Image 1 (tube, rainbow, N blue to C red):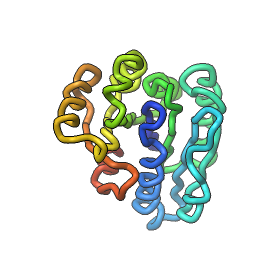
Image 2: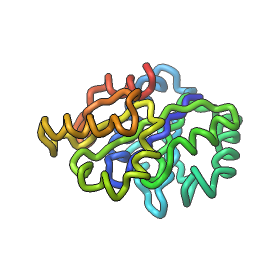
Image 3: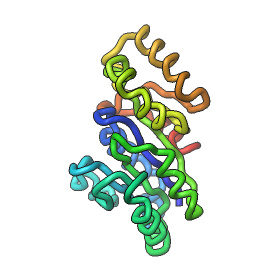
Image 4: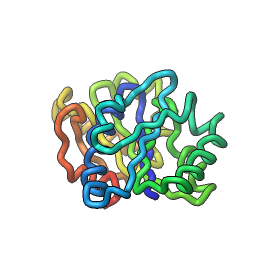
Length: 199
């Protein structure tokens, strides 16, 4: 069971990315083998980020399993849910959308404690980076430092010099993650999805 944790501050484009990514995963794995499953776990507090009616036709099911932050108070529920999911469905992929204030590393730790490996992909809003950098420095540090992939999203809203400045700034948080420029509201190059999956 492959698990991808999608992190990023509120409004960074997680939902737009997940809608495209999940369709790609279903096409890649499930069309040739209908027994394989892909599950999306929603973790946005008080909102429904993914419109499951958009994805139902692709064989996806969206589950709102949490009403709070999976990295803190609901860690036990997360562990139990994942154990049950693995036992009953054993999906090929679980795509977990973390709340915009979650620390993906803590979610990963909960999963590691029950023997489940995961990858972390964090989206960064290029258009708001300069504005949120100082007030949210601690949160951004916690979200970015353990990411395997960082997607610099909304790059259509900044110029080349601004993109370079943001990429240099991200070095303060993480120097090892793969970094990719994206515009998640447009059709994304599927090679990005392969990198996110670790391919």
